[in-house]
Length: 238
Image (cartoon, rainbow, N blue to C red; front, top):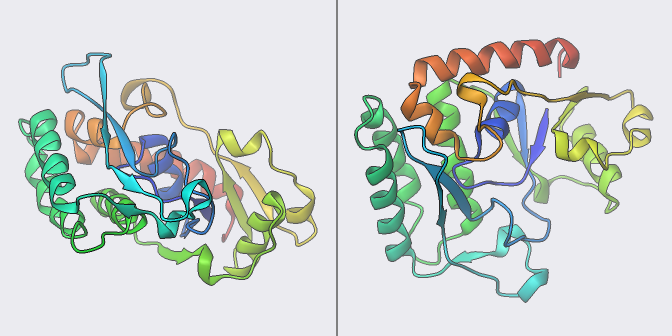
């Protein structure tokens, strides 16, 4: 099981962690962070250039800085929709696998309507990439599960509520996670690590779209399955 905020066109490291889990709890009832990846993705070209560009979705926070992720809304959804479609086409339209992504992308673009929820747009963009990789897990939402407020205890409660027996934790989470609430319920914490070469050399920096469109969906899917299999041994039946 993995717990992660909805990210817009997430990085390959994040996508691989979700793929390795049989359940993803979308952490959507915590505070929205403008400098995180909830409403933006870093794009890079197919030529191997280290130059990156942010694809950001202008987002309104109805309650100011205290706004929860689930309550953030897209500013000017039609304009944002065009920007997403145009930038992705510009960067990756020449990829042989672009038609695969473009077909799936319609479900993301469809979310830019009315009072568009940024959380829904971001979640759908992640689901699109997971579908391309062949993931068949289940998705739950933290707002619908009982959990206490302290950070580590909250994650443990969410894991328990979902029926998980193990928790996949990324490198960032391992820096603050307290193991006691998990151990008290017999939950295994499995640190999630990815390689750093090949398709993974910028896996923690840029959107997974770059790897999918440059190396190809089939190759990236094979790489992700291999990484997932190593971590699933630690999770057992989680």
